Structures are given as structure tokens and as C-alpha cells.
Image (cartoon, rainbow, N blue to C red; front, side, top):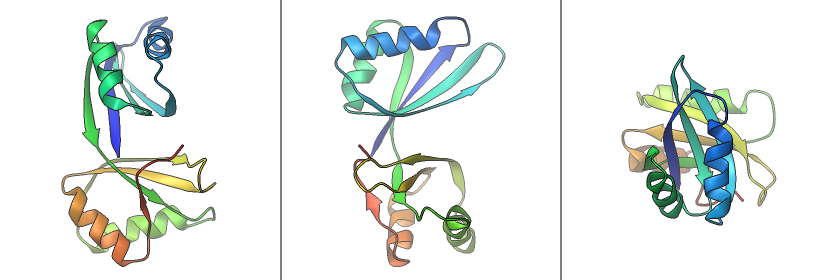
Length: 137
């Protein structure tokens, strides 16, 4: 799965500008998370077409990139994220970051994972019975 990351100034109207550019380009946002600092932040999104979204945003002056991430279905119950993380810890694998969203297809939570070796983590998790999915909406 591909994720769009946008480096954006932390000021009034920035998110509205970003979402307007995507709306004008016909891009659907499935998931959005922001991490802020005093002056700039990173907006991470799962969108219907990451490459087209990046092109539209770059044309409007935004710095952005497209990364590969893993989308892993987890159970909707207490401790399910902890169980997933315990597998990665036992496998001595480091997470760059993780966030949880929801799949409108399966009606289940989905952990979005960014790691150095996606194939290794995908193999490990699939071997433990987890489903790696390619779309959440």
C-alpha cells in the first residue's frame, strides 16, 4: 500500500488548502493523520491515487513523497495491537511509525506500519496468521 506524506506549514488554512487541492484533483482520502511541531508538520494520508495526489500537491508548492507501508488487519478487541507489536518485538524488528485506521471493506481495524524491510515484516506477520491488505476503502 502507498502512503502520501506532506511536509506542511503549521498555519491557519493549510489543511483546507491541501484538501481542496485533492478534491479538485478527484482524489479520495481514506485515512489522514497529522504530526505537528511549532512551525511545520507531517500530514500522512492513504488516498485513492497517491502518485496523482503527490503531483497535484507538488504543483501547488507542497513538499511531499510517496512511501510504501504495510496495512495489517487486526481484531477489534482489547490487546490486539499489543499482540501485533509483541510479534515485531520478538522478531527484533523496529517500527519507524504506526497508526491505526479502519477498513470499510472488512469493517475491521487496520494497523498502518512503516518499517525498513516491508517484505520481512509482511512475511513474519502472515506467518502468524495476519492479513496484509492492499486497500482499506
